[in-house]
Image 1 (cartoon, rainbow, N blue to C red):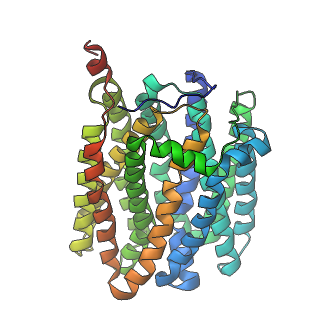
Image 2: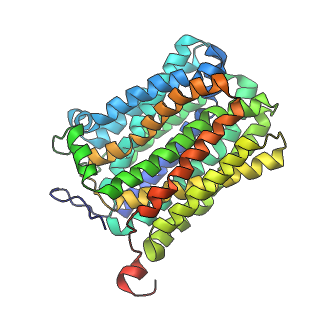
Length: 406
């Protein structure tokens, strides 16, 4: 069984009040991001065509990956994680303001790419802040509650953003996200201005890699995280394009996406509690990966524009994804503390790396195969990760470790 990193002077201390505040920030952040994340691939498609959309994601997430390798130095240079979060959210406000004044075109596409970079780095910094105020014994519950509140923000955003883009176009969406980021900035100033912040000792990417290599289970959970993020990038980029290509209206897409996101609100906190108190993460991870792989494969194999069919399949894919998301976080964060921001940054490279691979693979794939086939790539990636999930050393639940019913 793996143990938390040693030799770190920083000690975690659970701060429930600050965690509640951070969860409120995540709610606002999640809503704001989801307000544009499902429609920007269509924006890129209007600029360069659907076959080349991946190129924007390739460039943006290559930069995100580079910045994550240097995240600990960026945080140190700015003066701590909280100040860094303020700065990146302020940049998002500026970019949203610029985008709301631009017409659809290359300049707007480049600004969106910058916004993707800024928002992704801000999410990782918020992750560091949350870990600084958490403790290992409550990780599943803290992460489950945090993700549930964040995803409650995600729930209504696609429905509203598709309505806005239908009526006001993309400029209306960008005006909405400007307001969202401005509210997030104000709330962050209010909730975090007096919060404690930890700045790690100087450490480079090679050190983080060597620390990961010493703990094989961390590499396994990284692989599972990579598969989940690959699934997300395929679904976020190509499911709106696919649904539009088969004649589904923006209004119906908004309803479908709101329905498909329900599992993140319904299941993540209960799964986090069960992982903490009874079973650990391993068993549920295996089941979630299998469910996600099978359901997204169905989407790739059986063409249908029937809304009930699409809604049911998309709902099942997100049950699997919701389980993977909370359990991979709970498993990983039980092994580290808030002083391991180098490991947190390394762990979060799964998203940009998966986005880069998704973009690199999708461009030639779509030159040969139909759009619907792209979902089979996500299914294969999730299915393969069942093997490392089975090899994980499970973390015991409280009942298993103490023998006392909980």
